[in-house]
Length: 285
Length: 300
Image (cartoon, rainbow over all chains, first blue to last red; front, side, top):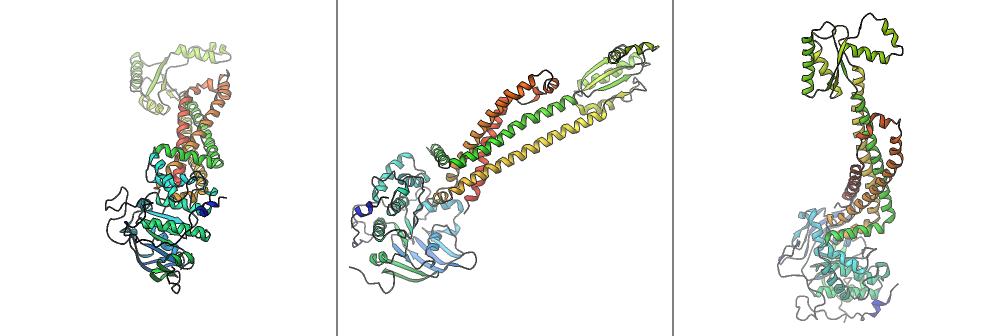
């Protein structure tokens, strides 16, 4: 339907990204940074501390029958990092992500997020874990009968925010992701890229410390994909840890971030400033 | 604030799933209608049975040769039973009264003129407070010296027992039927709401994904169930009111109707009370139906 927005956005150019840890050099803050003052927010289940944001210790996930999702994965993602998870379909990327948001539980090993071992997490606490993690999916997962603004508002209402807060924050966050003037569109009235922006806005509205994206550009054309990745990068610059599972070779090669490659449920490569394949690791100017 | 939001969510969901909401409402309507028709019918049958058992009485015949002191002692025993609540009333029927009653009952009273003397004994007609008290009364006076040796005590033993059995059966069958009806209604409404949730399975998934707690998801569905239950109950009550005014009241007004004869209509429930019960039942059905169904979808 509406195709224009993404082309109206400035052309994506790969700028030299300042280190997330040096906020002085960052441009005027576009997203309010997650609260990192060591104080615990109400309902916050992350344990404050210097440890990694996400840690997998020898995680095995076996599905019914014998098919293996993950086969002994150990990895560590530090606070403020931007990480690509790459690998062919069925390599275990989605399994890994679903373990982080505790949609799945490991068969053995432990998954630790924000200092919390998720195996110790009571079922009633899972919603609070999900509020601390922003999630973005290939299929957007928007509520189809709600407008863009209502979709974002729902995530705020879930965390107990009143109408006043909703009216203030929803337009703010939607304009930050580049959706000015489309607040009252239903998902089906928006382009794929725009729907993904709504879902990113929804993921961000509760100031998560960790943003997880499972194939966020899987349904989008290359140009739109770059816009979405740019947005994720800008979010990362405010200090939010970002993990992106993708097969988008083009984007991964251009962005030169940390890459964790999975194959048949095992980590086969974990490399800083890398491309999609080991051979194409040269930095693009 | 929150409650307002849950209501808005519930109304949104009713609008979005109009067909399913109508189905749930009609289910509630049928369940409440059957319940509403059943309660007064059951009470009517029960009060009719009660009215019959109230007619059970015990005749204690007095020997012609009993002395005044013996008769007074027997009367004293029966009065004692009345003060402790076993007996509702004691009436003395003299020999002359007995003959007069007999004369009224016979088609050809002239046969009585042939009798040399009045053969009928005097009696105490005893009305038990409860039909099952008849045994107690019989036990208390059966060895009294004033008793007539041939007639003794007469009471319709088998009729009383049968009526009592019938009354108990009606009562238990009634409870069982109401229980089955309510269970069926809960399952039906639950099934309808399951359809509604199934249609919005993905929606519930998304809600969980953004960190909605189970109660946050549940409330709008429960309110939706209650609204459907209430609307169904109100319509059902309206239909029952129409039937009561148009059919039952008109029938009861007929001179020879069974209702007026037994006075049983007085024993059934008052309509405003019935309305309250039915509307409460409708709301409860909706809430329980959706509550039970949601459990399955909110696991993990």
